Image (cartoon, rainbow, N blue to C red):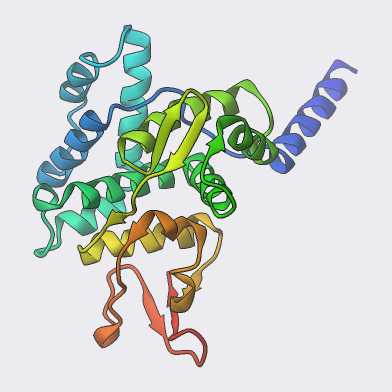
Length: 252
């Protein structure tokens, strides 16, 4: 009898998580300078140096438990995006250290979003809001994210621990507690970073392709300023397919 009751409770819990909740994952913020250091280190060495990252994290985080959570998040980002990072490290035309600040931040936001998709959804919520007004309250964002992920403590923590990175990467500006405006677009000239920005939207939107003409109009791309070069149809992350609409498709 107890087993049957437990089974029903577990079934309904899983059903709730499927219908109302989505993976959040982030429970502790990652200082931008540590994030940048770890990605640069991995691209150069191909290895994760957790001890070095942990010591650096402790300079910005109080308490060993919080520092360990941050380290786990950082290592997860590297492991879950090793295909993209290996692509970058093996490219003769890519050097992380000579990217502009905007390009570095654009890449880091993509890696973070691909690991913790709540970041992508937060940015989409802001972008949609900025289409109709210049100032957005945190409450509006929390309500929208809560509708997708469930209005629970994990969701609130996920929003709170993600916002500092969005602010430090100059995507969002906090004018005062709980009120935000949009900052300038990140200018991206590096072709591989541009591809990763587009790849991130395709991946997290649940699609397999995007019309080239859609790239300028979708909410995700409002944070970036770049051009997709279709010349020779050569891409590292896409297959290009001709179309009578929108100049063709990019497929992953």
